[in-house]
Length: 385
Image (cartoon, rainbow, N blue to C red; front, side):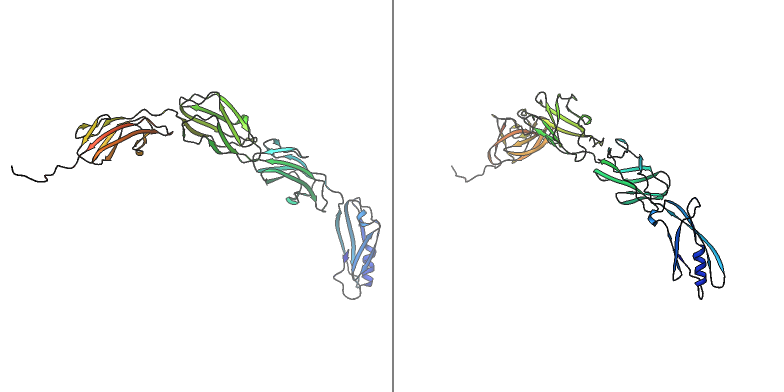
């Protein structure tokens, strides 16, 4: 379609000259048959073939514009007909955990959500992924950075030429797991003291995507002598690791060491958890100190005599044991000799002393008897004889 926009006065003669001079040729410089019509200084060339039947290629239009005064000017321009869609893009690059990314619904697997995808394309085409242009029109290999979701990602990739023709689609599937498994709980709890040996050790974890790689998950349980405990490790369902010892846990402190790894190689932090099995009650406490009127305080059956209300009582204990007197804790759990200040009542005082370890085992009681007389005798009267 041509428009004469510079004419003055009658253009009848000029229009006829333009119409007579329009020449349309294909890429082989062969004339294209057709007809030309004019309306309001707009010239329309209609090829003999239907326009949508023109073969793909570059066409040149030449004509000479002329006005009624005989002035002329030659014009020429070209246009391209492209009715052929580009070929399907080829996926050639991008490396993920499973290797080079492949198309055709291959099971690509990545432990990173950031993925580089690359491929080839027909000249002068743009690259579209899931309906969005990712690479502008150009020539040569293409590459694009993608941020994918966890789990399944389905990518439909096509290219589009400058005429708007769309290629067949290539399909790329990428499964992503970039989150390491995480421990959520341990049984027995970390730092616990047990009077009964546990029958099993349970480690709960969260791994929502690729699943736990049990064979490559490092784990061990060692006692206080750094000897590894033999037993059976199993994966229970998709969220629990279990250990059953070959023999019952003996009295000792134990360290659970574990580092979870999922099926795409993501590793959680190396973690250690401790628990102690203590089934033995502490020995009865020994009373070793505290001085009253009658001397160094001794355990029953001795009855100690005091003339002061404030008394200091001391003794020995098993490591990591607290001291309880008459049902109340007087000394916090610890190691080494202990000492506590007491306030006595007038008359006989019976002190029941026992030890309690961190597992809750309680020793046999030690009894201390102290008779208090802190009131001086008073003269109630004098009678002459």
